[in-house]
Amino acid sequence: MAGNLSFEDLKSLAAEGSIDTVLVCLVDMQGRLMGKRFHVQNFLDSAHKETHCCDYLLATDLEMATPDGYTSSSWITGYGDYVMQPDLDTLRLAAWLPGTALVLCDILDHHTHKHVPHSPRAMLQKQIERLKKYGLTAKMATELEFFLFEQGFDQLRKANYQNLEPISGYNEDYHILQTTKEEKILRPLRNHLFASGIPVENTKGEAETGQEELNIRYSDALECADHHTIAKNATKEVAWQHGHAASFLAKWNPKRLGSATHIHLSLWNDEKPVFYDPKGNHGMSKLMGHYLAGLIKYASDYTWFLAPYVNSYKRFMKGSFAPTKTAWSIDNRTASFRLCGSDTKAIRVECRIGGADLNPYLAEAALMAAGLKGLEDQLELPPPTTGDLYQDENVGELPSTLRASTETLRNSRMLRDAMGDAVIDHYVRCAEWEQEEFDKVVTDWEIKRGFERA
Ligand code: ADP
Image 1 (tube, protein in one colour):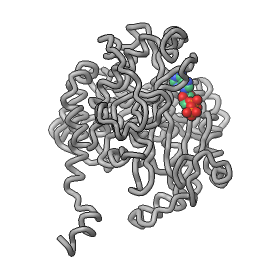
Image 2 (cartoon, helix red, strand yellow):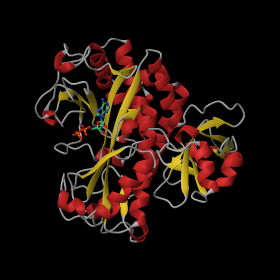
Image 3 (cartoon, helix red, strand yellow):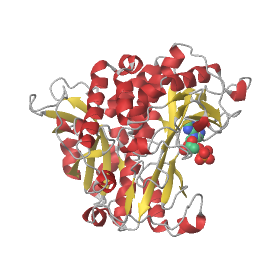
Image 4 (tube, helix red, strand yellow):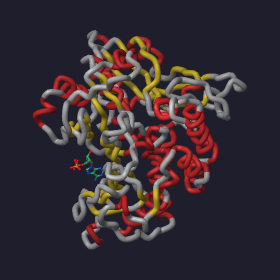
């Protein structure tokens, strides 16, 4: 389901006074919605064609800093403008906000009007086009895990994030009783997203105190990333409307499990699932074998796109349901890649590497680049692994720190060929900056440990 408003629908809703505001948004490197709130009349008159934003929006960090080292945007180039071009296919209600619609934009160079290559949406569109040359489309679903807290964002920030209290008192995995208590947030979230053209499947309690999961029906890769980004923003906003905070940090408490974004993926040709072959092992086609072999072989190259912060790597712990090894398995949750729906037309791969903090456009683009390389090189799929992979010495390790994944990203010939050197250099700089910022900090842990005793 694409955006659920046509331009004509918006005109009618504006005329009858039901919509007065249009959020015109781009997706930044961190996967956040950034943009402007237009009066609907101005959007209908002109802003639906284009509007503008400062080019630092694709060269900043979570704090909106202006890091050095980016070729595309800097003090030297004067931080000029990008064109934000609304993709009217994404126009939809933002039903959780009164009188509001929302549209996502592509980002164009102000002078040449060409797509900015390091824009996350453009990066995914590029890989989709590459797949299309083989007559293939990718369908994906992202599972959004997050924590809900008793307190709201502002209250927690003012208290310096001390005494974070999850909304429930016990592990609520699949719990109906506990999640009933959370319906004041999750029911409006499901219904508002659905009314906004986002095909919500369900929400469920997850395997920690206060942890939730939101599932959205699989769709074409770009739509899936659009759905994820809007749904994540809406989750925070609906929680905020009820005086609570929703956090997508990969790991907020060392003693608790982290939050993931598991990504389900399959390839299709003309609406036929080409991962399925009833004669293949477990119902897998040869094509699926090559694609999965590519995902496994290059997992370390693209880990950064699935785990972009220092904190992301705190999730990868033994016995935590987050993988540490580059291997596949049949329905085994300790592997990076799990075969789901074996021997059925719904056969697919679940990639379990990503954290809740990933940018879905970058993650999907990277997975597609790796899978495609597997196809092009007809890579052979190793046998599935079994047992507790945390203990398995015979399979590859994922990078375990941001520093390590920055180097595997920097040195990835595969990603440079698929995405372009300038794009990879841009994201390597983003990764380096995150580490540099962290390296400047003296943590509470260091003070507690060493203040008196070092
Ligand atoms: P689980 O029981 O593990 O939650 P589900 O059957 O609910 O598994 O599926 C998990 C996700 O996989 C859902 O979001 C669903 O939309 C998605 N999915 C189902 N079939 C496919 C497919 N062929 N390709 C990609 N994603 C799919």
